[in-house]
Image (cartoon, rainbow, N blue to C red):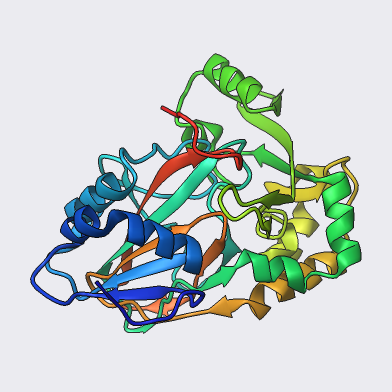
Amino acid sequence: MLVTEIPGALPAVIEADGGTTVPELIAAERDRIRELITESGAVLFRGFKEGGVDNLDASVRALSGAPLHYSERSSPRTNIKGQVYTSTEYPNTEEIFLHNECSYQLSWPGLVYFTCLAEATEQGATPLADVRKVYQAIDPSVREEFERRGWMYVRNFLGQDMGGTWQYYYDTKDRAEVERYCAGQDIGVEWLGEDGLHTRAVRQAVHRHPVTGEKVWFNHATFFHVTTLPAEYSAGLREMYDEDELPSNTYYGDGGVIPDDVIAHLQQAYRSAWTRYDWRQGDLLVIDNMLTAHGREPFAGPRKIAIAMAEASNGAGSIARD
């Protein structure tokens, strides 16, 4: 196994040194690969034989077991095959800010897998950030306030043109099923009029990694805050809606408003830990979701990235999830 970056780099790169596939290498070196993911936070497999959606699915199953279903959705994606999905389908001119997958849920994927089906012609990287470094870059008084108060995620499902429908994001048309799911996930539910839904959930902002024991900045408080949207969108939404009617927004866990300058400080903490590389077709990236945040640069060209998620965790370790 040829590792071309030292542990601690994002990502560590494993280059093909023969005619093997990624699933075959995992079968031969599974323990060492898992150690490297934990040491580095992310591993990129490059130059291996085969690729594509079936190779991604086989790699997930070889390293992690069955992939997870994308539940409690927060962004538009298309199911490609099985539990393999497109990456977030936002306009190519927009940046997707750094975040940890599904950190707004009570359980989340421990590992997230990406594979490049088509390269961009300009930009299009999936930037990464070590959230241990993000944690250290945040002013201690800001960290302490979030650790003490937690953070709250508020969503208003107002229809297809305004943030999307609850039917898509909860993958059901049954209100009772939404209520059952939300009750099990500590999500407050309020139905609005004929077909609207208001939800709110309080989560921790800081967790400890279940293997290393290190503190990590693991939350969506920055990502979902209205000011992390492009400036013209953020200003437009604030003109159209009262604060508690925005399609999505974040607060301190007790409902207090997070000042815009605090969010700006958090945004800078993420950017201070930012690293990037350019995708090559056939690349397969595996990230430890509690150590590494990811995002997306704007891009031009036919860029297409497929993703899969695995190893449901609640921060204390792996848990079973359908």
